[in-house]
Length: 244
Ligand SMILES: C[S@@+](CC[C@H](N)C(=O)[O-])C[C@H]1O[C@@H](n2cnc3c(N)ncnc32)[C@H](O)[C@@H]1O
Image (cartoon, rainbow, N blue to C red; front, side):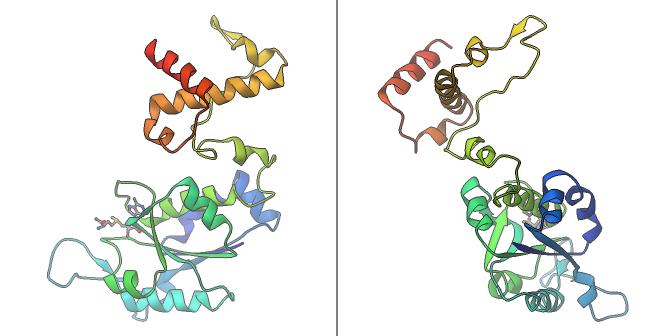
């Protein structure tokens, strides 16, 4: 996969992308991450990328001419021309399904906004997708792009030590993930659930599934609505919730 990131703060990406899973994926040739400073395409002496909003109001707006020039030039660097994704609070909210969808692409072009955001013509005539990482406002699209890239890279085959990791983690089956334990078997009087040290893989799998269901029911009940539980699981869950 090739990822092109357009930003006025390319240095922000260097720390997070120089560690751990993303770094390994880049070094292993699974993904290339290309940073482009939008200011390079500003034509005036001051490298201006923003201007006052028509109609007045606070803040500045990212200029369409510079953002179009930067993006069109970057698009020429590889044959695939879509998706061109704007990070914006008005975009579709990032979910596991969207991450999986994006991980199947050969190329992603991500544009990070600043100030009050982009001139509307960037949204209308340049972007092919708009993504938000949640219902809150960040100072810029860079942190949102980092979150998106990190989540997508985990789904590129070979990026994680074990391919099972993405299959078993939260949201993969529409559920939150069960609690994990590691040694010691007892810590400050709190023991590890017996089933986990039993060595019985069937029982462990069953316990984990039930714990996934219970955690999801308690924290994110709306996720359970689109999931089919067996009669046994449903009864067990009702019992657990009734006992609270
Ligand atoms: C200060 S924000 C602009 C907010 C905009 N005026 C509004 O009210 O929707 C500047 C930039 O940060 C990015 N950004 C802010 N919040 C975001 C979010 N929740 N998801 C994705 N990008 C976000 C976008 O690129 C946006 O253009």
